[in-house]
Image 1: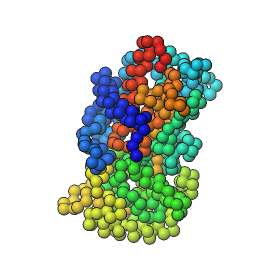
Image 2: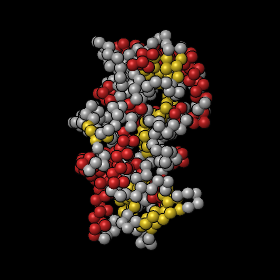
Image 3: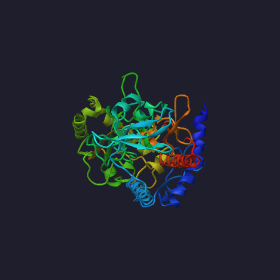
Image 4: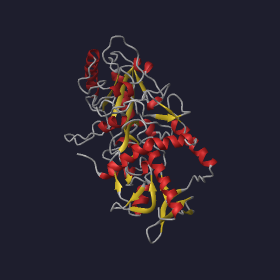
Length: 447
């Protein structure tokens, strides 16, 4: 079908500008990186992906599991900003823009307390980098293509720029999509501030079933694609039958597949969102009980009356396919990203055909966790051009207004190409914004 001129120009700017931005940040000490050469692209199996490895970089001092990469990156950047004399003000929530009669944006109005507002003027322009709307229930309900049950974005990501930008005529785009991932529903319910998205379902003797007790997808899909599959609409039942799923693993999976990386659904040690059952009957009862405690989030979702029998039959079929090494239903393990990207730690089994398939134990114990479709963050918001200038309904820049990151509409559409598909382009476009503002300040023209 091709792409629009807007799509093409932004993708070109991203490819041309990401490496220079990353290199400059590294050289200036703003964000030190190291390559993660063993990370595979999420679409590496497609013919057009000629370089399936080597695109991913991570913060230099992040731990091997990369569970602290965000903290490391923010700490590094904040320190450099302080060294440069940047005035960082926390507890200032921008509410509205200050706009001249000509339409030029000249600053912001921020709430400091419930009773006190502060006007902050700008000589050249205002740049928003305030995140998406993962934690604004109204925006999620009204715009996302299917329900989303929370996510791991910062708690302050409530879509402020959607409303602030709209108030001055910004055009919105890509509002239906998010950087999708499954989330552990009980951690969402607990409002766990340290919650990571469930970007990996590791293990071989492990499957995921919906509330009918049936497999419905390839558990080794990249997280964006997996969560999108969870949001599939069933016209016959007029429902989202896979929106809530239950991970089912045996003792082998629990022992060998625990990991802290990639938001593993089987984390290290004891976690309250993981339950243990001695039999499948016990498993069904525990899943039923946990769902009853989550009905305020699920809208009263319950196990299908045939869940237990369906689960038994699902495991029987899975075991038959695992012995043969071929997932005839959903193709698990058929492409490289299933194994290299999302296989997780699995025991060596000499001679087996498929490295991410193994029969589940027929005697238990079994381990489970309830997951739901969620997001890393959303990716729809005001539309911008290649220099991050916010566009109005006629695709004309709003003078002095810029945006970058998840607070603006993503040119990636619904896709998620590889690890860093969010942060890499953000750095590229942030650099372009800085260059444009710098030139504007020098010649005195409008931003």
